[in-house]
Structures are given as structure tokens and as C-alpha cells.
Length: 152
Image (cartoon, rainbow, N blue to C red):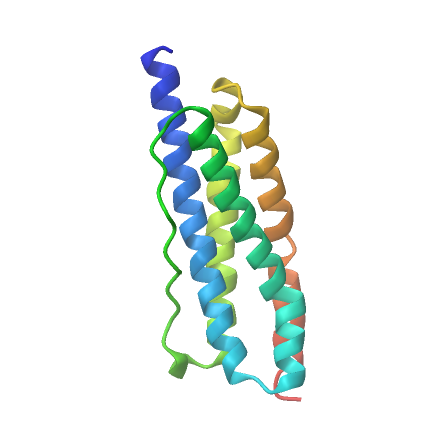
């Protein structure tokens, strides 16, 4: 394996870890927001936002771990994300979650645009990155719908 291929794989892994951490932050913010809502709105938040973000987080972690294992690269464990203070309120926490999910989506899009996933020749990682983005893509619109109904 050449240095450039090895360096490219490490760069891809580092960038994916960065995106995964941001998804973890989104998940944490949604968890704190959920605790502040009544049962009806909490269920709505869980179905519209928490589950898709949780699925994206799991898929990103799996993509990371599988890629690292395929190439014998050191992997890391992902710690739970950090959320803003509970005193910020559910609206603010949902906004923070949308921002974090958007950051993750943008990081992955930039990675895909760089063609690094193609250069390292790994179809599985390309599929994993696409799957994560498909899960994160609808989050902003869904969040607007959830926030629109809060307080009613």
C-alpha cells in the first residue's frame, strides 16, 4: 500500500469521525429536548427526528468501524454527544440538533465531493456515507414541522 493510499484512508476515517461526533451531538440535543416535552410532542419528536438521527449515528459508526477494520487502521469508540443546557428550552435544543446534523451532512458531502472515497477504492464506505446523508437530509424540514406544533 502506498503512502498516499494509507494517508487517504486515514484522512477519510478522521473526517468520518468528525461527522459522526456531530451526529452524536445532534442526538444528545434531541434527547434533552425530548425530556422537556409532553408525551404527545415527545412522541412526535422521537418519530420525526430522534429515530432518523439515531439511525444515522449508528450507520456512521458502523461505516467507520468497518472501514477501519478492512484496512487495519486503529478505530476509536464514540462517546455520547454533548447537548446544550436543558435550560435552553426544547426549541433551542432542536435548533442545535438541526445545526449539528447539518454540519455532519455538510462534512460528509465535502468528503464525497473530494472524491477521496473513490480514490481509496472502497464501495462499502461510499454506500455508508450515502446512507448517512439520506437519513440526515430530511431532518431540517422535519424539525420545522415539529417546532411548528410546539406550544399548541
